[in-house]
Image (tube, rainbow over all chains, first blue to last red; front, side, top):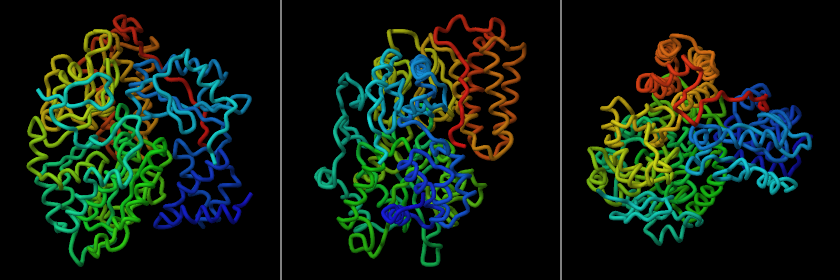
Length: 162
Length: 454
């Protein structure tokens, strides 16, 4: 792939908020990920060419940040808060139910490509612990029994990537 | 005792004084737009500052207000601003950055301020920008707050159209641009020099100091980084004066404080209260006490990097000065409460897992030492602990913190060393029995993660 004219217009708009191409790199990668789900090797080269930066520099950033993906992920990314307040209020039961229902561990994608399961650092929703985020939506005071209904509601739904 | 309306609580506590920072935030309602914000007096402080006060006067009022940083370090804002070179020969452009990379476990106040009243933050940035004679401002947000970034972008656009941002603001001949930046998720980006590397598009490792950011920060230019809550105090200080802000506090510290209470209380939430409320009042008067009437065991007062407090510390005022006197820190005021059933070793293991994972990997003591600490705790909770392990944990931690490059590993010291000192019997129980018979919420080791990032 390479960027279409429409893509470039959008990327130029993102670029305009930044001092230089390097400063824009994370926002450009996030936009590509939102569009394609992850940053493929080919996309990384395209971004490098667009920004006129070494691909290795972008790779360094992509592998540093928790939420830039260099491998394909499922249609819905589940981020389960594993920080202390959620742990105290029952995170482990929620996590175990998710792993059991999806048949996957952290960092893995379900066989039907619907879900990727990730641990997340404190989501800033501790008063509603245990909490998780699916795509951009937060779920409050999740119980193991409530996990099934959440998965059912999300499964088959499109995501809002763009 | 003064009770304020708690933001997130269901029960009504009679308010004697109106909240300041959260006054126009209503749960479940969209934030005020420009017209709505102006209707409640919004942007009047920015106008007052830019039209009637010199930058020097604004810096002085902030200094007199004794505003201290709400992001964790508690550094006096006015003092920090004094380090920025001013005058016709000073370097430019100058930058002001709002740090909204809120990832300190147990902290959820900036989320509320960003999502609940984005125009208040824009106004605060204009005031800070004027005071520092900055040219460009950035609001740095964690990726999970992207909804807030969109609200903020809408507010910035409205303010721009109204002539409150851009060139020649309010006919002052001063120009100021404001941008929202959404990051891609790493705790270390909240460290101000790592944050500046992140904004430059470099790998976000912390930088060495000196030079301090106020002298040479973003792209080598004078830069001030402030926490969101610190910044949104500014419109209120400009409107009501330094003396008013000082008298808001119950102790020698100034202002109100957003206390985020989580863990084993009946009503967790964000409570805007006069700074200096005691831990007892916060838990028992505002949060409805410990859930199910259980006993209080311990609390961490200010996010993952602060020290455990025990029942004999319930009457300590939660402010900068008194917690420092007690050898602790207010941190972010993310108060995490443990009840009699909670394993302190379990909390510590969870926190050490967090710090080990979020180490940026730049310096060896932190990168190698924190996982080693986590492994030792892991062994302890799975029954492989050995005689002397608690002492070893303490000695190792004391070596890692002071020998590492930035404050991340020093943050990990807080909960671990205070737990070892205040709850030695819980560690010894794991050494002796491989479990803590007193805790029903048990310590367990985290599961492995397959990398999707590389």
